[in-house]
Image (cartoon, rainbow, N blue to C red; front, side, top):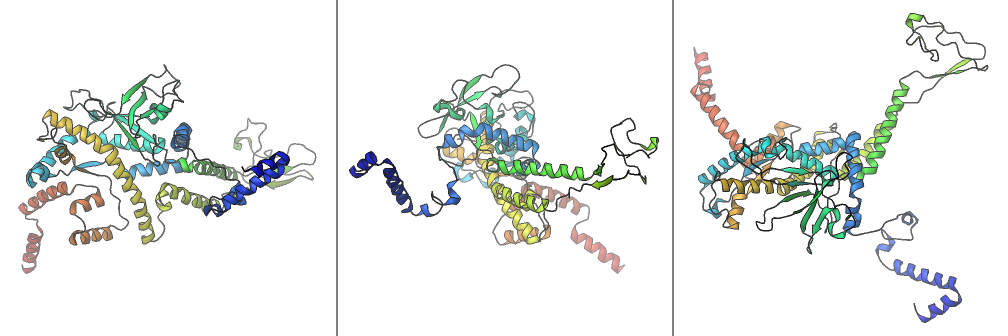
Length: 516
């Protein structure tokens, strides 16, 4: 503030305030976006109250309420539950399956030897993964653990997994997977406002997690004792082994915790649920014959008097009125009957709900047709919607594989090598060799086909033109394993030839019959 402004402020404060306001407005108007999204003068934007904070102010401190509302929507709103369940089923299905892809060139292994190594490793992993022994609680297979972890991440924003080592007689492996709900990783009591443990995660100067504070039970549980907290290092200090897996979808730099996928559509889903319930109740009410009897004298109308006692629905109810089939009811002078029609079902209900669902689907990256399983358009439109949805599903699957499945597979492989059940020379000596042994792909449920013939023809063309492989197309079309299918088909064709049922043999037999 210059000398003139100071003098005016002393002698005429109101004029000084007007000068200051005018100067601030000029500063705003002089910049580009102040005419548009950053305008503070347009009436349409004056009521827009916003305040930008850091990632902890905007996300971490609001997570408790977001989780509660997201879970409530999942439990009570069909559309919310359907959206999350569809994502889980499409991304995970029965569980992502590992397909070893070791780099034999790095470790000096020939193609056939590498193939034998991959088959043996996949069998050993299936021995661990297809049994509930892989679960710390002995309840779920690895595929079921994946499905639960992914659904929990969608609903709560993130989920954690510990990797304890415990011996069990039914399996040679000691590695276990123990899932933790998002709420269990939180600041200990009395340290809720401690900036160093916000969200239960301590980070270093680079933002990397150092310690996770984990409660042994849900911190807001109403039953039993109070929870106890334990500080678990993110990685082993001596071994460097990963102690905690944090499955989360990041959206801002410096973020410690994840945001529920329904966070941006919480209000839309809740209001849509209320509207649906109101329309449903109105339709139920309209299913009853509702009448009003106008009586000038105020006496009770004679409804139900001419119905036989044995035909009455509730003869013991002296306050109820009933209408009988074909009954003739005489009304007193001046009395009349007026019915009430709530005009339900509402003709505008479906178009309105469809419009809202399209917006919700856009926020969740699920086209309306896929979100509602409503394929009534043309083949091209339905296929476009399916392809758009599967772009998101494949992205989520890739993140699930890299952030959850692959780290657990690498921990299991290290134990398998230690036990001598998988032979991997140089695994612990050379980081590059270890990386080569750990290479793998993860395949999940297939996309499915609207027109199977067209999809198969397109897959054949991609293979013939060298744009894809039989293994990838098999995984994409059926979710299966090409090599397993090939081995099975080889056995089947050999059996058919031995039985004289090969295609050429059948033709010869038919020709002999015709000539005879």
